[in-house]
Image (cartoon, rainbow, N blue to C red; front, top):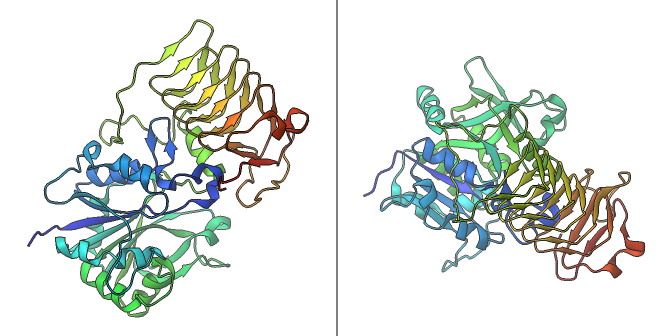
Length: 424
């Protein structure tokens, strides 16, 4: 029988509904980040940098881009004869077939995969966070405490604590209390959704709790194990960690990359972030251009001005165009004379000539105030914006729009244009 000390199970099936039109056609872990990467590259790179060479990636929502990005795991050195990376979509079983209905249910449906490796420990990860962590250090902490479960935790501002699972520990890090998203948190030590389970404990808890609807680690598995008196410990992490689950946090995390001294460093030799890289031509910067404090991907053609922005590969920015504090993903085309401020423009979108994006005053979204609550313009992939229009703040566009979609040539702040068949 194959024997692995620790395997990782990476939950990457999320829809990412709070990213609005950005995740209409792609799973959240496959969304572009930092001009070169996809969000899932970060936990995958953490695995291989930590010596974890067996990773099951659980996919569900819009998995095509994710599957082709991961492939057989070559960029992360996860193309192994024994172990490596395996994509695990939901599959039909003889007795009971269902989609993954919760984080723990997804893991439960893949017990057979885990049993193949007979691990001592199972590392549970989420596919939608930006951070660097050495899981081997966390495993050593788990062993030293003879823990059944170790939860990676980090301090958060108390006013934000009700968004997380909150733990209360003793002086040795043993967890005395665990509350999932409490209204009145009793501490500010928040679960990061990263767990190490001793294999027997995980298996027993999953089998026992498998009949719970939408079975979830934070709501069901952790409380069950705590009530059973198992040894739960909090591994405190104090590095950079960002849940890029909202448009605001996604934009912020990208903008932090272009700071003079970035809080999150993509350039460290000892902890590289790996990704699938295509063979692309070099950038071209024309004599009419100006570039300041920006990340610019390969194959990009710049004839205009870029300031404080993150630009993907194969982007084209026309003469006289100005792009400020924006994220342009791969293959975006910006026409001549455009002025773009605080926008997120998804892959292969085309912006016509003399378009003004991010004008006027902030107004509440008429589409979905829970998702669109920032002064950002969000444009979904393969969208088209015609020449000479103006687009206000906190707006969303998805699909091939035409001049008739813009009354008096304007999309007012808070407005949205979503073409039939496009989801938001």
